[in-house]
Length: 112
Length: 113
Image (cartoon, rainbow over all chains, first blue to last red):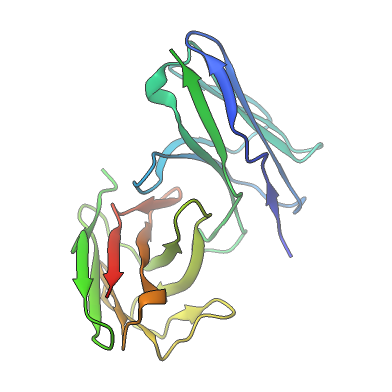
């Protein structure tokens, strides 16, 4: 059973701080990793993808991948109240259909 | 790019009726689409994988005769909730498999009275 684990939170950070969201996965052969953001009452939206070890930056977001430790994280710099949402970590199950294994999500609350 | 639509966004129906939800990929072709259900304050739960031109693959515990899925074209999949009951009230979200990953539709909120 492939699993993706996240701390459910809530993770509370002050406005302007760095929010650090973490995720571990069980399948060592996983190759593709994604972060989705889900606002309350809305559907998930893709914010970051990462495939190689190391960091990948996109604006205020940085995804970090460490395949040896089976660990992927998302850093949000200069956190804003509008970043308050649930962040879902997802891992491709390795098939051809892009079927994803989702974590349960971490609720982030950015305090003004 | 990678836009997915769902219709309707909201539906209220009486117990015992059937409800059809459409999922369309607007700017790309999707051989595979996925249907999820999400209850309030709970995680996404994958219901089934929909493959164009073939039968859907249902997750364990999902009744295939109750949740009928049809994927008739590369841009359209439909989910029909048959004989809906109040416990089927939920947020139903589809996604389409694109080049990189899944792209989600906006969701359909179903309330069964």
